[in-house]
Image 1 (cartoon, helix red, strand yellow):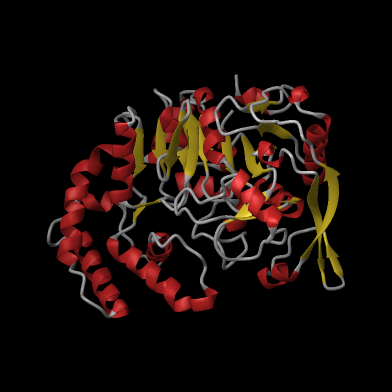
Image 2 (spheres, helix red, strand yellow; image 1 turned 180 degrees about the horizontal axis):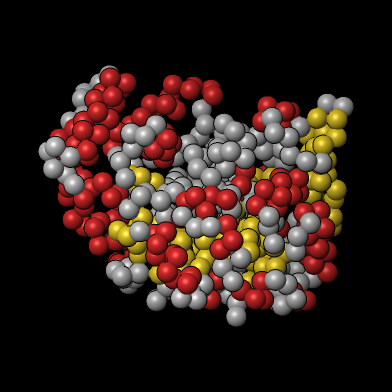
Length: 432
C-alpha cells in the first residue's frame, strides 16, 4: 500500500520524524511540493538532522528519494544539503533524483520575495524570504525556468532569452544596482554540471517502480491550513500541501495513493502571520513554546502556540480524506494541570463547528473549549499505548472522537523509538 504523509495543521507538525519512522517499510519516498522553506527535523541516535528539500527518507540506505515537479528547487540550497549529508556520512548519489520539470528558484526570486514583503507593511504574509512565492509566480506566469531547461544553454536557446527577460524585469522592479543576466546564466551553467546526474523524469520513475511492486511514500511539506487553495488565504504557502498536490506534484494518478496519514501535534502551532484561534499569548503559550522547542527549523522564528484545534483538524480530515492521524509531541503536555480542546468557534452570535472559508471571519472567532484533566506522570519515551497513564489515554481518545479518525501513531519524544504504534489501527499495515 502506498501512503501519503502530510501536515494536518499549519505546518511544523513533526512530519520529518514520522516519514523517517515509516521509511524502512517503503522503497521510495517522493516529495511533491514546496521548497527549502520547509524544515523537517529528525533525531537519530542523539544526532539532529534538519532537511529542507531532500525527503526525510534519505537517512535510510537503499531507499530512493525523489523531488517532484511540484517542488521549486534552489540549486545552491540543494547542493548545500547534499554536502551537509555527505559530511555526516550519508551519500545520496544514486538514491536522490530531481524532476526535470521542477522549477528553479533563482537569485532574482529571493530579492523579489524580500521586496514584496517589505511593500506589504502591516499586511505582510510572514514568508521565509527564500524566493519560493516568486518562483511559483513565474511558473504560473509561464516565464519560469525548469531544471530540464539547463540542458541547452546555447546563446540562441530559450533559456538565455528567459533569463535575460526575467533579470531585466527584476531590475525595473527593484530599482537599485543592476543584476547581470550573464552572471545568472554563468551560475546556471556551473550548476548543471553538478545537477545533471540527479535529473530524471520522476513521473515515469514512479510509474515503473509501482509497476514493479515497490511501495511509495508521498511526502508533503508545510500543512493543510497553509495550502494555497484550501488554507487561510492569503496567509498561506504558494503550493498545494494537501493530498491532491501529490498527484499534480509528482505526475501520478489518484488511485495510486493507497492511504493518507495526517500528522498533527497534541496542541497547535503556527509560524508567521494569519489567524490562529486557539493562540495562547501568556504564560501557557510560552510554556508550550519552550517545552516543545517551538522555533522554526528553517528560520529559527518562534512559533505561535495554542491549544489543540479540533475544528482545524476536522477540516484537514475532510480535505485530505485522512485515514488516520499521527499525533506528535504528547510529552510536551506532561505536567500541565488542565488541557483545553477547541471543539467549535463562537463568531458573534453564531456557533461554528466547521472552519469558515473567510479568513477575516476566522480571525474574529473565539474558541469554544472543553477541558480535560492533565497528568503528572511523564509520557516521554513510552512505546506501548497501555503504558500511558489514564489521563493521557483519555486525552488521546477524546482527540480521536472530536476529529473523527484514529490516532494510529503517537509520538512521545523526538527520537525514532519514542513512538507508540497502535497495533489495532490501520498503521499496523504500514509497518509490515
